Image (cartoon, rainbow, N blue to C red; front, side, top):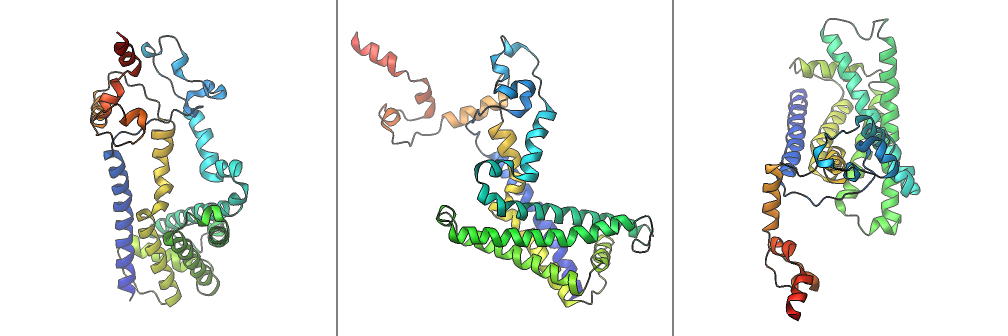
Length: 313
């Protein structure tokens, strides 16, 4: 059984990485998107304060374009960590979705610290008995249960909202409910394991040590094994679902919402635009289909006013 646990763990990591890469590659191969052009764009720096852009500068196409990393971070960090947009636009939803997401962030931090101490232990240092590492060990013991409990609270709250709020229930499907129940179950077993089997997370650290060193040493606790199996299934499963937004949001913000790269001397972009312009027109709106145009290139170059004037001659 122990060997099986290790094999499942390795496979789950491979599936996770492969699924993430597949999502990203699939996105990059998609046709060029329609730019939102929503302002302010944070990387505009000072201009973002009033919703301006480089396009307002005279001769902008001849100037070196400058962007602000600080401005981008000032917009991204509050959104990523504290769900700022949800707080501003849907406060009742924020009350339940924030603890869910923040609990996951804390859990990821907990796993990262646990992995770091596992590497330190591999170097020959007794992590549990080291005086210098006591603050780190104490932080791990604090973050683990906190992350588990916050995630459970948030998942239960989100499940309740989806079941009772018509605005959410009408757009919910089986996957939404399954995902939330999966997190509740996985984190619930993690809490039980912490309470009754591994209160100091020494067993979890030793498991990571074995995992890194490729030693499939037996693990005695059935509850811990169950926790690992549930965690690995969740890790492999999440990037295959709509919850892959945890990393795809990068493209939503930087490439779609804030994408304002000028199309000057960019053959690659011109090629992508050319492909899209040759797509057939399938819209039924009379102001487009009524023109009898077959491709979007014809629609883009058609001037109804000019045709109207020609008809008067």
